[in-house]
Image (cartoon, rainbow, N blue to C red; front, side, top):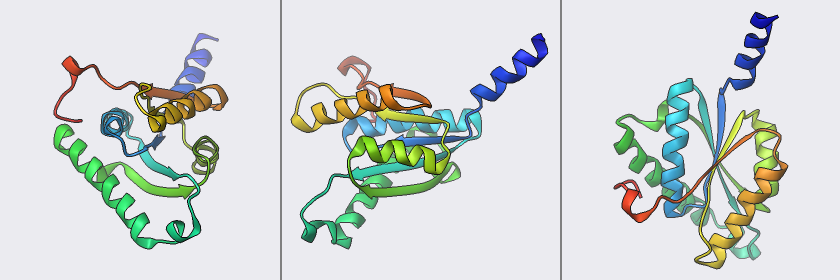
Length: 163
């Protein structure tokens, strides 16, 4: 009975795929550091997701707009790569950019991609965007059926060169 219980716990705690969500803020790099560390320790893959809220049609159709977001995600990855001393190419399996309501897209993506955990950064209430994203974090925490890690912005004294 004990051995059977331990095997169930191992199965529950297996992390093979991580959904890392980013709003491209400064805290995104800090949260990605945690996702990269978790991926390395668990030999897991990371799916990166950025959700664009619906915009006017002329902006949504812009390939340049989407390409700029991809470049910002790549720069974020490079910043973290310098800190962890390896390339995130080892464990990032996909970069997804979706249009929609962030909380709905995050919940849909975790199911579609078969992710075991979600890593999302939190924010203070310094701006409307940060307040909104904080609400997204809260919504995900209460609605997700997977583990959710909300990474807070570090205090000024604990900030590294990462962010």
